[in-house]
Every structure is written in structure tokens, then in C-alpha cells.
Image (cartoon, rainbow, N blue to C red):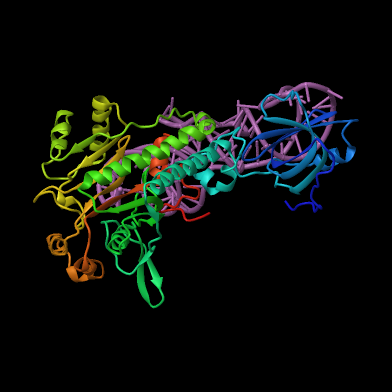
Amino acid sequence: MGGRRSEGIHMGEEGRVKVHGWVSEVRDLGRIRFVVIRNWKEKIQLTLKRGITPDELFELTDDLTQESVIEAVGEEVAEKKAKAVDREIVPAKIVVHSVAHPKLPMDPNWKVPAQLPTRLDNRPLDLRRPEVQAIFKIEASLIHGMEEWLRENGFLRVFTPAIIGAASESGAEVFRVQYFDREAYLRQDPQLHRQLTIIGGFERIYDLGVNWRAELSHTPRHLSEFRSIAVELAFIENEQDTMRVEEEMIRAGIKRVVEERSKELELLNVDLEVPKTPFPELRFPKVYDILEEMGKSVEYGEDYDTESERLLWQYVKQEYGADFFFVNRFPFKVKPFYVMKEDETWARSVDLLYKGLELSSGGQREHRYDVLVSQIREKGMNPKSLEWFTKFFAYGAPPHGGFAVGIERLTMKMLDLPNIKEAALFPRDPERVLP
RNA sequence: GCCCGGGUGGUGUAGCCCGGUUAGCAUAGGGGCCUGUCGAGCCCCAGACCCGGGUUCAAAUCCCGGCCCGGGCGCCA
């Protein structure tokens, strides 16, 4: 390990280029030596020739190991002979910043692929792989595109709290945290504070942030910590207004990915198309009939399961050629207290599914104080415990709605990744909190 | 949480059913040869059966328990 101190490199003569990176390979042929380095933009080959290159550069690179970090200054070869790299350079000076331990816990050059747990145990080395970096470059473009659309359409970015004093929201298990001398919780969703911000007079907002779920889920599509882009808007007619925002936001995100990440998509072998809007919408109770026709029986008035989600995708794929689709008018009994009812049984509650996986929940919220409190009672909850939230609805609340899209899930499905952990830099699951 | 499958050098695997040579291969590592390699090549070296118990003359292999990992379901986005 350790490194060699140096004064760094200063550009001297004209026509010289300065490069840096992690050593991907040293190929020593005796009187010629190739050092291939990689950084997050390109691969570069340094070519050292005995008799031409100063001997000190050979000495310096004698015990250069894979994944060591170097900088070099040299002459770029105009017509490079090296095939598998972007540039070829004849170095005049090399600085070794850090010599990597010769025995690596995994191979970032992927000659021998490692399994996911090994990769995650050694994530910083895994992240050096161009294929892995591509995922996060794409994810960044996706978020950029979605945020850009939201800003252009009058949405303001806000930050709602991550630590909350009362467990509530969805039915998901919460992480408890010691908050001075009492107990508090990590948010499962920025939902309730988004609504309170709307009541605070901010008519179009979004919160891009972290959510935590303490569920013991062992699946390729769950994380204990995940990020969402959560949107809320006021003065809507009905849930359709939230759906139009959601589909255009997603469309804009994917459009940006397609426009500026073609190289990364190619590297991942993904053929991505910008989805057409509006997305198809399926509604309860018709969903039961569709499932029935596909040989799946779900009891009337009940929620559907994971298999149903995949069957419904198959259905919309056939009928509309779509991968994104909404499911609307869920039974009120399977949704949280704050959703707006359409009638006694069904709610203006909308899920967005992508390739058979739930990406978001949303729809119109109940803004009428009396109705909200009666719905809390209907759910068998104590209105007192939610007073911190509901009382502000008594002082003027506009009709509003929104949704929260899981970012890792969207990335995972967009790139057909086999596991959601691939879409998180340092994923957290029930077993893993390190590194 | 329930069910199923798996744990062999640093990494990735073969062997396990049907118990018995020195546990095979690839890659990374160490040494050597080579002036255009590009998954460089060739020669040599070193390196492993998850833990505990049981069955047996003999266990990587069969049985039991534990730990860890993956998948399906549930929970959930």
C-alpha cells in the first residue's frame, strides 16, 4: 500500500497531455511495457519503450500493481496502435500516488466476475467498473431530467423532515431512533409533511430524499433505505391531474437518459425508448375481471398480489404495448386513511407500475377535515394520535394530491437490473449496513 | 417471518447423487522468458473443502444443529 510522495505534475512544454487514473493492467513484454489506466471517462494506454523512455519510468512502474493510482504527462500518439483504449500516450513523467495491495478482494477488470455479496462487500472496487458507473451516470441523468421538468412546470424543491415524532403514514414498519430523551422515527415517506407544506400555501412542491423501511423483506426489489422523488400539488380537479404530472415527469427523465447516456446504455446493453404518454389506466373493480380472464382469481374488494402485478403488465403490454401503467380506484380498505374516496368502496388512489413492479403510490388526498377524521375512525385508528397532522386541515386546506416514485426501482426496471441493490451506491438491507 | 436452494484457494467454479489417488480448472498473486501487447503468450511456484456434532475402517461427499448467502412468497414502494 502506501504511496510515493511527489511534487505533482506541472505542464511544461507545448503539446503534452496530462492524464490520470487507476491501473487496469501492466503488460510487460521485456523491452516494451504497456500500462493501461482507467478513469471515469476513458481508458488510456501508456507505452514505455526501452531505450526511448527514460529508465527511471521503468523503475517507477516496475512494481506497479493493478488498481494503483497514477498521473502521467506525455505525448499523445496521433494514430494510436492500441485497440481497446481511447487514447495512447508516450509518457515523459509518471507520478505514482498510491500503490494498491497486490491481492485484491475482487477484480474490477472483471476477468473473473464476482457475485453480488462479494461486490457489495467491496463496493468501492466494484464501483470502478465502467458498467457499474454507467448505472449511476444514468440514474443522475434520470433525476436531472425529472427535476428539470418539475422546475419548468412550476414545482419548488423543498426539504421535509426525515425524523418524525409519530409513527404513522403507510403501514410499513419504522426505524426507531433515540431522539434526546424520547423515541422518534425515521420517515417511511415524506407524505404527511408534503401535505402540510401544501396547507402552508406552497402549491406545487417536490421533495427528493431518503426513506426508510424496517421491513424484513428479502427480495431483489426491496431496500431498507431508498430514495424517492415525491411530488405534491394543490388545486387539482381530481387524481387525473396527479397522473398527468407523474407520467410527464417520468417521460422527461427517460428522455434525458436517452439523449445524453447512449454510451452508457450501450455498455449495459439496454435498448431504451421514451415512453408514450398518457400511460394506460386500469381501474378497480374492472381489474378483477381482467385478472379473472387471465386465470387469476382475486376476491372482490380485496388487494391484489405480486403475481397479479405481473399479469396486469402482460395485459397492458398486449393491449397497449406499454410498460408503464396506472392502476386507479383501489379499494379504500387496503389504502391509508388520507386517500380521497370516490365512493363508499373505491378510492382515488393510484399506483404506477413499471414492467410489473409498483413504482409509486399516489392520487388525490382527502382535504376536508371532517371527512379525514371520520376516515381515521373507519381505519380503527385513534384520531388523537394523528391530531398533530389533521388539526391543520381545520384551518383551510385546498384539494391536492401527489405521488412518490422510488428512484432505485425506476432505475432497476429501466435498465433491467436483476437486483435493486445494483441501483444503490451502498445499499442497505436487513443484513447489510456496511460499508 | 415462512418455503426452497447453496456455502470448495483472494475471486469464480468442477468434484457431492454413487464416501476411498496428491481436491481439478480459470483468473488474480510470486519467479522467469519475450520490442506493439490489447482478456497478451509460454514455463515454474505458492494458495481452499463455513462452524460444531454424528455415522463409518474412511467424510468436501451421508445425517443433525448452527451461522452466512441467494431465490420464491408474505410484508411493503
